[in-house]
Structure formats: C-alpha cells, structure tokens
Image (cartoon, rainbow, N blue to C red; front, side, top):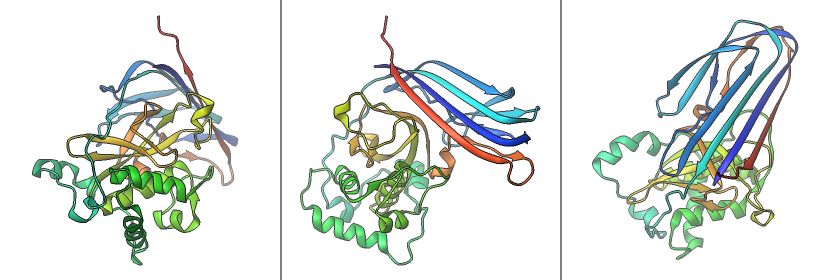
Length: 290
C-alpha cells in the first residue's frame, strides 16, 4: 500500500511577529512495516533546518527563522509504503493484570520509562475502573489489551478538540469522552497500571473505505498507543477506532508522554493578542505503484 500524505499547518497573526525555533516531528523512521519512499518539507517564511534524533530515536528537524511574518506555513509531504504490522499472537487473559507481565531483566531495564506512571491518581479512580473492567471481562477475547481497547472504545464518546494538550486520564473517564489523544493517553496509563510498558504514538490514519466507519475526524493527525508484549514486541492499539495492529495506522513519532510527540512545537515574539488562529489539514491518497 503506497500512500501520499500531505500535512499542512498554518499559524495566523494580526501583525508580523518574530518566530523562535520550531521543533518539527513530521518524518517517520523506516522499519519492516513502514518504508519512507520520499519526503518534502516547505516552510514560509524561509527557515534553516537542523536535523537530529531525539531521545526516543525520532527524526526531528529544528527550524530557525530570520524574517518576521504574519503567517507561518509548514507543509510536509510524505510518500509511504505500509506493510503488515506486528500482530499480537500471545494469548493474554485477565489474569495477566493480576500475575504481571513477564519481561526479561534486559527488557525491563530498557522499558522502565514506559512502565513508570506519568499521571497521579490519588483517589484511585483509575484503579477502581480497572478492577471493574477485570470483573466484567471474564475470558473476553483471550487478549487482555485488545479487550481494554474495545472497552474504552465502547465507553467513551469521540469529540474534536482543537486546543492543545491532552486531558488527564481521570478527566477523560469522568467526562466520558475526548479526542484520539485522550483515548490513547487513558489506555496507556491503564496499561501501565497493569504492568505493561506502553508509549504514545502520533501519526495519521488512512480511512480505506466508507465501511471502515472510523471515528477519527478526517483531515487531522491521529494518536494511539504501542504496548510492548513479550514475544510480540511493540504492538499498536487504537482505542478510538477499536483497531489492533492495523495497516491503516501510519506511525510518525513515539514518546513516553504526549507532549514529547507533538508534530509541531514552537514560539513567537509579538504583542499580546497577536495570535489569531491555527488551521491543520491532512490528506491521504493512495498512489498507483508502477
């Protein structure tokens, strides 16, 4: 499956402003399940780019600007080839949440940041939800994490929220809904409380046909979770759309916490009230292979 992805972001200001460095996470890594065929990145006003790999190994471009402007346009075009992802083969019933997942000593050393909880839960609301989930699930599908994603998919209502940031997992549970990044973050913190190493993933999702009936809004970026399963490795779980290891998921970046995987992050210098708004557009089109 060869796909062309165009991701356009525009920031608008009431008058010309100066731009601080912008951190761009718009290029994925090649792997057995995802091959980068071609890339193009255009920025206006012009910027010099310094490329690096962050602590997670994600390709990151730091854009430095000289000119002021009242509009900042960043357009990324990717040509990707998507292959079959890792599919969970190991059966994992509700008992795994009680007996604990078994990682080797070396795996646990590497995975420790993704095992550590990032959100406080002083009232144990997440723990109580998990206890109720375990009581309800019974034998389920034979895979605890698949059942967890399915349960969240059914319990929450998808909403589009354009403001930055991710809700606290407890707020997502109590409000009964959120964006894809809120679904993913709740899933991750619940998985960690069950002893699994989990990380936040940002990228895109390709709605291949009307029958897929994806919840994710068309034209936006997407977020989901990776969980490290012994014998299977990193496996993708998308509670928003109730998908597991699906080729529709097009990974760009991974991180321990959502703020470390923002596609674009930066600053500007200008009078208060200068910022007028932000627009994001994502289009994904199949490309006929020669």
